[in-house]
Image 1 (cartoon, rainbow over the protein chains, first blue to last red):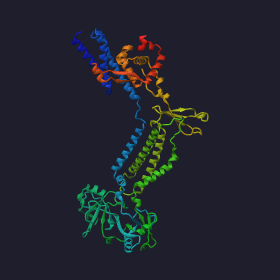
Image 2: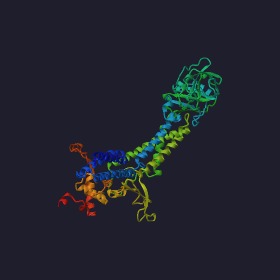
Image 3: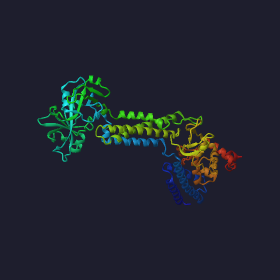
Image 4: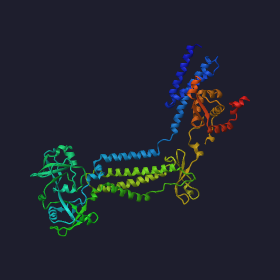
Length: 498
Length: 105
C-alpha cells in the first residue's frame, strides 16, 4: 500500500474516532478518545510487520473505529441510566428547606414592602417618652374614644397632681385645607397643646420653627398626608396653608406610624391652651411622675381630680405600653399557646423505635435533629413575618383588631406548621432524610390482634422500611423503622452488569 | 452484595481475560474475540460496579518507549470474588481463556 494512501486511511480513522468522541459525554470525551487512539496504535503494532500495512489490517482498524460509535452510544446510555437512578431532589431534605426558605423570603419581602407592616415591625418608629398615659373618664372606656372636655383639662392643669407632671390636650376635627393642595378633602386635624410634642418626644422630620406668630399657627403633617398630597417634597416646610378658619405654616412632617395616639390625625395644629373650647371633647395625654408610676394598677392609674361638671366621675390614666409594645410580645404569646395546644392535634413523638439493633450513626442522628431544628426555626420566622403581613398590611396606626389578627394568625400558622413539621419528620428516612414513599397496605384490619396490619413505606434509596400500625396496639403502638442491610441492595440497584 | 452479582457471559469473559493478564482493551479484545463496541462498554460497566479498576500508564514510560500511553485494567477484590462465582456458573470459562500457567502446561 502506498504511503500516501496509508496516511489518508490513518487520518480517516482518527476522524472517525473524533466523530465518535463527540457522542461521548463531554467530561469523558478526552479520556475515551485517548484510549481509542492508543489502542488503535497498539492494534496496528500487534500485527505482523508483513501484514501491518495490508488491507486486512486496515479492515480491522476500520472495524475498531466503527466499534467506537457503539462504545460512545453505550456510554451515553450508561450516563442516562445513572441520571435516572440518581436520587432526585423530590422529597429530599434540601427541597423541603428550599421551599421553607422561599416562603420565609417571600413573607420577609412583603414585610419590607407593605408600609403598615414595616412600621409595625420597627417599634422604634412609634416609641414615645416613657411614663406617658392617656386620660379617660371611666375605667373600662374604650381608650380610642375622646372623653375629656376642654374644661376638665383646664381644671386638671390648674390643680397640681402628685402622680402627673405634664399634661397636653388635643381635639380632633375635620377641616378643609387650602391653598397648595389641588384636591382639598377634609383632613383629620388635631388641635393640640403647644407642649404635646415635647411631652411625647420629638420625632418631627424637616422640622421648622413651631412658635406661633400672631395668627400664624404651626402645622405638623403626617407622613402619609405628606406623601399623598405633597408628593413627599421637602419644600413643604414653611408653606402657609389655611386650615379651617386658622392660617398655619407647615413646620414639619411626622414620620410614619409615630406615637399611635388615638384619633388618627392627618395633621397637628399647635395652639395655646387658652384657645381650647371648654365644651370640646378631646384627648389628654399626661406624663407620670415616679410616684404616679408606683401607684399604677397594672397599666392604669387612678387620678384623684375633682371634675366640676360630674363630681362622681373617675379619671383614669391608661398606659401607652399596650399601643407601643410592638408585635414581638404577641408573637411570643401566640407561639407559647400553639406549643401548648400541639399535643391536642398530633402526637409529638418522632417514631424513634425500630425493629433491628441497627442504629444510625451519631452524625446521622445529629443531622436529623439539625434538620428538625432548622425547619422549626424557619417555621417560626415564617409565622412571625406572615402574621405581620396578614394583620398589618393595611394598618395606618394602632389597631386592636390588627393585634387580635396577629395573635390568631400566629397561633394557627405555628400550630398547624408544627403539626406538619412533626408529620413530615416522622416520614423521613433517618439515614438520608428523604421522605419515604410507595405506601403499601399490609395485613387485614380484621386480624389486628393476630398479626399486625398497617402501612409499609420505603426509602427510595433503600435504607429503611417504615411500618405504621393501622390500629395501635399494646405491642405495636407507634411506627417503627426497619433498617435494611446490604442484602436488600439488589432491589434498589439499577440494571446488572453485562 | 458483590458476591451475589450475576454476570453475563461476556462480562465474565472480560473478567477472566483481565485475570489472566490481559490488562489493555485491545488485548482483552484479542483474547476474548469480542469486538471493540462490546468490550469497552462492558468494561465501563464493570468499572462502574467496582469489579475492575483502571489507571493510565505514566506518560514518561510511554514516551521512553515511543508509543502512546495505555490504560491498564485490573480486578478489584470484589471483582475476584465475582469471577470465582462466575467460574462456577460458567465452567468452560477457564478453558476458553486459560491462565498463562495453564497455557504453558
